[in-house]
Amino acid sequence: MNLAATRWRAPAVLYPVGRSAVLAAGCGSIAFGGLLALGYWVAQGAWRHPWWVVGVVFATWSVVVALALRFWRALPTGDLHWGGAHWELKSAGPSVDGACLYVHADLQRFMLVRLESADQPPCWLWLERRARPERWNDLRRAVYSRAETAGTNMPLDPSPPAG
Image 1: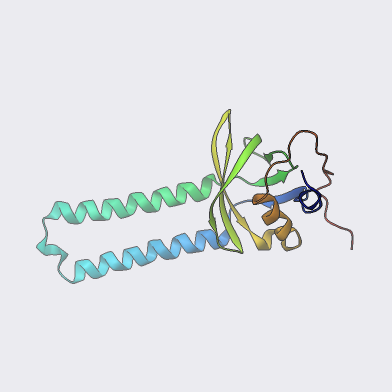
Image 2: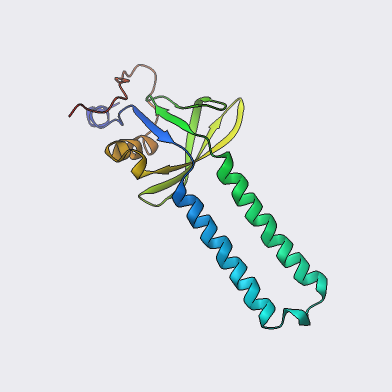
C-alpha cells in the first residue's frame, strides 16, 4: 500500500441504522399516488375492461404496498460498524458479522445498501445523514473504500471526536 493510500484510509465508523420516517413517508406517498391513479382510471372508464382486469390491477397494487410495508418493518435497528476489514451490524435482532456492503442507491443524504455475509441472508439498510451528521462523511468514505489487506494496521476507534 502506498503512502497516499495509507494516509487517506477510511476511519473506523460506528453508525446508527433503523427504520426511517423519510423512507416511510416516501413509500406512503408513492402508494397514495398509485391509489389516486387507479381511482382516476376507474373514473375514466375502467368499467369498459373485463372485471377481472380491474381486480388484477387493484390486487397488484395491494401486493406491492404490502411488500413495501414488509420491507420497511423488516429494516433492522442497531449500529453499523466498519473496522477496516469488513462490516458488522450489531442489532437487537440477528447481527451480521464479517459482511461486505454493496451500495444500491446513493442519494447523497440517503443510501440504500445491502450487507452480505457468507452465513446469513442479505440484509438491507437505509442510511440517513441526519442519524449522525458528524459521522456521515466518515461513513461515506468507508462505504467506498476497499478493505484493508493483512499487514496494515488501522486504529479501530469508532468514537466521535471530543468537542
